[in-house]
Length: 76
Image (cartoon, rainbow, N blue to C red):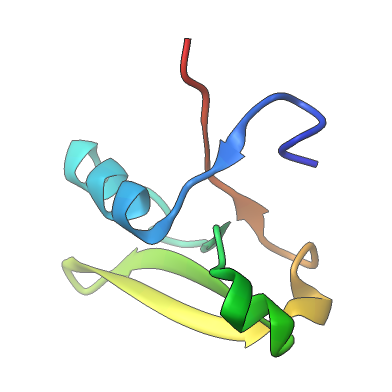
């Protein structure tokens, strides 16, 4: 979906940088780019902001587009 709308999903480093600009995903979480090795094993990662810090988690890729959105970047 991100590719269809012309953006890239944030990677973990970009997601952490985003959280320095403001506090995002304080009540939700967002899928972030998952390394190929993890995707090959059926996993996907997501992040959120809780308790004053960024948390990065994992889940099965089958829920990749379930209840979470994603954060993207557009470079012009």
